Image 1 (spheres, rainbow, N blue to C red):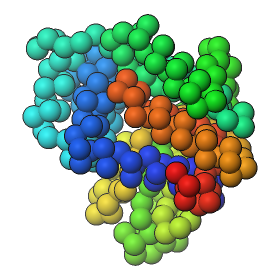
Image 2: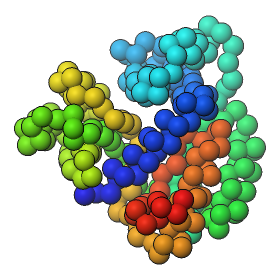
Image 3: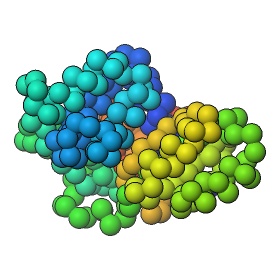
Image 4: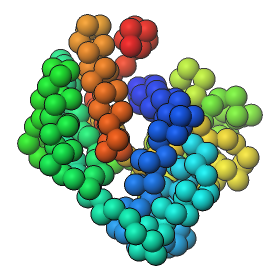
Length: 249
């Protein structure tokens, strides 16, 4: 197993908990606004980034009115903030590599906040390009094994549809896809009436690092602290997460 499934499942579970409190809707709105402005307008059929952003918003039951308002902010129909996309690169406990994806209307504030969080949890901010080479952009779709009637047939169908890799572990299928094939394969799964547990296009580590329990717990606490910041859209790390580490956080 690649090890990414557990990581994505953790992120998805946390986001679901945030959604219950409404905390994630602000981040999802920012994502939609920027997708409209940078991806080619407010029509999902002509803007893949927007289609992905809307799909993610719906995964977390974001109200349609919120989605439509975010699109209008992106097109300029109603006034909205001017968000800037920033990638911060750094290191965490045990030398893990971290990439923090931020959307902010105040670069100076975000930089200061990210630096402070890293420092508080024994991490450091690195220069641009310092760790980016350790990651690659891929689509990841997670499906519960219980949703699939015939596992072998399902995996073959995914490969035939263009999936780069598919793994099964802990009752889940993790499908890795090139960004260009992401929507095609996602739609193929949905047409089979198979419920998708989580899906996203993002940075994943080419390899993972296994830390001691002590350093692993510290590293995961850092990742969680970064993820809770309002400006942070995604936190990507090459930390290998074990059940032992999870039990302590």
